[in-house]
Length: 236
Image (tube, rainbow, N blue to C red; front, side, top):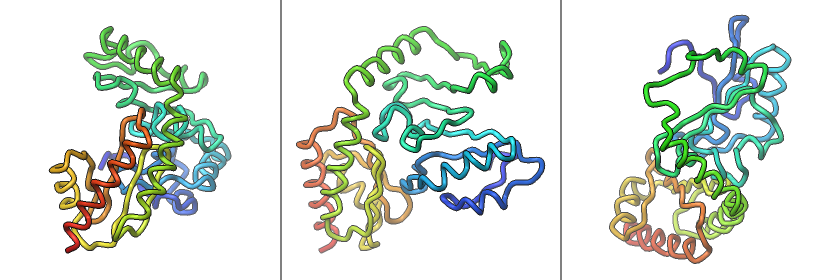
């Protein structure tokens, strides 16, 4: 674990409050916990953190490396909650496959970043920056956040009808399907791969999907068909 951090229970506002001391300077969370099994923050939790940080003079930092740039049905996930973080980090979709990451900060916080205080060997590479600009223009001009929101709802509704599904959690096109434990999630993943559907296994029972933001209903239907075949074959 990264030194200097104290950890609290996700979506439990009181747990976060109890973990803070007079020496706490900031709270950092993902608006959707991806590696934890796709658990979106509740509005009460994230808005509560914003209010608590304001009351205590602390910063609210949001990690949007997975959720940022239209994945969750908004340009950034925090926009789904009507709040504004002090710092937000981003990467992945920002570069469309090219290596790039960035942070945005409020004007007040940004004053602390003097020249050279936040740099890397390859930071700001012109080719990666050009790719990111082209990627972001494509995302915004085509309203792929809107498509992610619509397709995420459509896809999730269909996934709920699969055998052995315990729960489907999603925000836009960041989707987690929790099964009832009839088979290890990694076996479902491998069976889907054999059928040319790429998914990720999270823990023992969750399949996570982050489909392309140009996803169509036909794509969702095909993916559900493959998942159903995989589940039925393993459930025999």
